[in-house]
Amino acid sequence: MGQEVDDRVFTREDRTRYRAKVRRCLDVFARMLGERDFSVEVPHVGIEIEFNLANAQGDPALKNAEVLAAIADDDFQTELGLFNIEINVPPSPAAGQGLVTMETALREDLNEAQAKAGALDAHLLMIGILPTLQDRHFGRDVISANPRYHLLSEQILAARGEDIQIIIDGVDRLETTADTIIPEAACTSTQLHLQVQPEDFASSWNAAQAIAGVQVALGANSPFLLGRQLWHETRIPLFEQATDTRSEELKTQGVRPRVFFGERWITSVFDLFEENVRYFPALLPIVDDEDPLVELEAGRVPALQELRLHNGTVYRWNRPIYDVSDGRPHLRIENRLLPAGPTVVDTLANAALFYGLTAVLASSERPVWSQLSFRAAEENFHQAARAGIEAEQFWPGVGEVPVRELVLRHLLPLAHAGLDQMGVDDDVAARLLGVIEQPG
Image 1: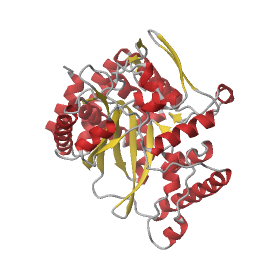
Image 2: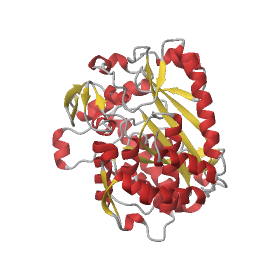
Image 3: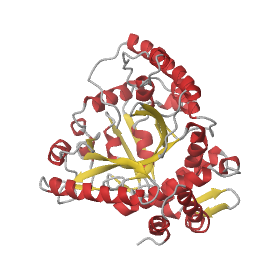
């Protein structure tokens, strides 16, 4: 769930200093985009998966610290709720058999982790929302011990000025409140990472936004929350509301939510970081000692810690990532809108669809986003969360069409072409996309 922080109390001076520092980081980032080499010889992809822990009866197992101690693998980390953990699959090239290599590594890691967790009566479940969650699992005592989670919860509630309210109308209606952000812990996701060059970032991000609805429609698996049947992918509205810093009055004024689909197609990765700084006040105003301008002018690569920390508290469904690896800066898209699971092969199939479609649409001579309004893309996204595989989607040149028809007739062939463009072996692409074409 982001960078580690220590427990602390923030002052008004902290916020003033942080605002100045994050703007300085933004200025340095703009210079870096023009002056520094972000290129990578072989772009990598990666996957993070959040898990629910459940006991033999299927109820939440509130023991992530014990489970992580038993697993004893740095690829597994804590998450917001005591019934959550996550795995970070090491990034690798997608080309050739790369996706199969990731699938094999993930299976092996999960099998080993499950054997160790099972001895503690904790089973790793991949689903967007654990259906057996009850109101008692949304208490303050269910937040993991990591100071970041408690601090972030305090800051969100302080910014909001009142308890968090969850209202979701689906087949049933859910209306509840919480005095922490713990309802967010119910939302467990698959996060797909795609490394891109700066000159390709805008087209890749726009492509990812355009297919967000299709992704959610195909991956939806979270219809139940607290005993109610709600949206097909209830995780979407729950996450939007569980981290909302806005009171009703601020919503009426048009203040933007921190869970943010966005508001326009972009022309540069800078657009997204600039929006973050311009629209969203700091939640964790922690100032690092680094002077990014000094680092840049000395020929070193700035960490831009404030910019990255702030970016981690703006919950875009397709989040831009600036990172430094082996002394080199790089950019990637973190696709955050899919639920966890339900199986390893489903996860890799959804990943293959995302990587393939993003690649082919980003390189199209007539981009899909030049024919699709941003608001239509956002409406596709929420319609898919409501209706899942039964959703209809608007697509340029096709119109309003059932998502099954759109995928089978139009998007799967494009995804095949995109994976081929990425150098993925034909047999790998055919097998993974075949899971979507002929599920079960």
